[in-house]
Amino acid sequence: MTNTERPTPFVRKAAYKQDKKQLCAQAYGLLTSLHAITLEEKEKSRNQPITFDGIVNTFVSESRVLNTKRVSEPEIITKDVSKKRARYHRIK
Image (cartoon, helix red, strand yellow):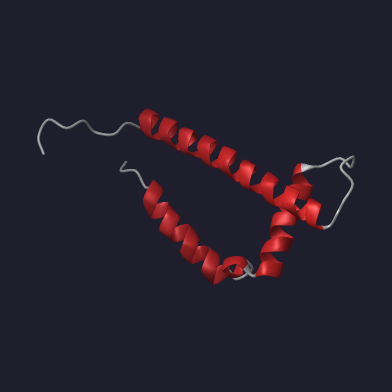
C-alpha cells in the first residue's frame, strides 16, 4: 500500500492502555459477580467486609473446583495467553 502511515509508539502505547483499562473493568465486573454468587450460595453474612484479595481467591478456588479450563495447568494457560497475545500484537 502506498501513502500509509507508520504506527507510532505513542499511539500503540495509548491503544494498549485503553485495552487494559477496558479489560480490567470487565474482569472486575465478572469477578465481583462470581464472588456475589459464591457468597449467596454459602449464605455468608452481608455485613462482612469484602477485599480484592478475597474476590481473586474466590476466582482461583472456584475455578479449581469447577475445573474451568484446567486453570492450574501451565500448558493450558500458556496456550491461551499466546492466542490472546496474537490478538493484541501491534506492528512496531
